[in-house]
Image (tube, rainbow, N blue to C red):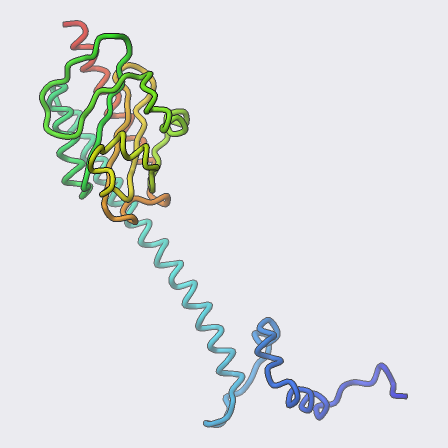
Length: 236
């Protein structure tokens, strides 16, 4: 009987690998720990296999890094656009110019295919909005269609990405089928609150990794200005 503590010889290892030629290929963790010199041209190179694994890992890390950089650039550009839009909104002197500026600037500066504003009202008397071009509709706060937005309205946080068919139908009507990604901003619970949506036909235009804190700020600024003009109309 052989000594169980006897070390395995190089010949035994070589013979094992000859009989199990795919052993190291099936053991990637072991392969990554081994070090090999370059083999002559025309021979099977485990060193090449090892370098291939390292290149694949480096490529994956490289792609992740570029995705982070692209996302940072996208968020920085979004921040700048939101900042400029908020300044323009604050310069508005009445509700008509406020609504017109919002709809026009979102369409232009955000390269939106569709912009939708749904303003809520309570009571039996539906307020009269100033004439403004765009998809602006007043809807009663108790309308059953708003149940589709309960989650968004309860959290009061922007949502970027895909919306349900019912949500898109309420916001975009007959154009809902052309909408494939949306940034949806809830505008609070109080009078003159509502929903603001910026939409694109590109399914990747608005996505969950976007900087929603900037959109939240836009919604808060617009909501406060809208309330001021709503109160002004009620007092007149």
